[in-house]
Length: 310
Image (cartoon, rainbow, N blue to C red; front, side, top):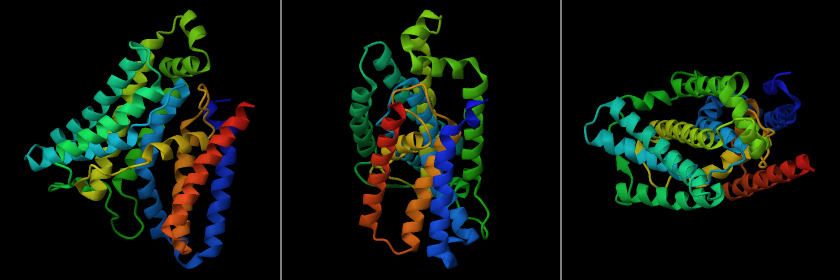
């Protein structure tokens, strides 16, 4: 049976349904509204896109702690380009390529310098955040979005913005790549046993670099949509996003030891965290309590991963 439909993500799906019903009972007048559903979909987009890239990385047996900083840097680059009167296409391309370049550097340091992904991305988390602050002169950059904001605008009633459909399209393509391409099979093979994969002819270094570049590009798209949401380039934005992305993948059935995970599971994990945050807001839970809940979700995700591996 295709891994998209295997059992590991059915548990998270059940949890999502239970949590949704719980908040629906606690706050039926507001939580069940179609407008709220559209809002939750919008709020899931950035986490979902970064979780897509994280799915590939975790399947490979790696990790990326720099995605939050990469999203912030992308938003700053896009804002700077727009303020400099560059075309919309140029601004978006520059933002995505910046994040992809960061992924390329991570991949090369991991494969050529033989550094562990944890150390490399821990360092790049600080480097990219510093670059974002430097490019922005340590302040937010206001720039005319030139229609880019319509990608994430709420629109009329409960209609879903284009950004949600864009994220869904990327998720579908990512799932197809993992399931039905040689590249996807190689990613899983490396995560399961890199040495065996190499003996079977898999070009481990090339696949590894490609995965980090791909994840970087997806993070760049997330950064563009983050700018479309905020309409400012904010170098302090998306702090902690990397933990949410990792948690989404693990909650959805991914394993930090590599070789196990799915796009469907990651998307369910991302949506689950959004539903919990939104539900807490609707029932009047304080923000500091929500942060505690988010932290507990991450811890639980790690415990689930540990139990799953025995």
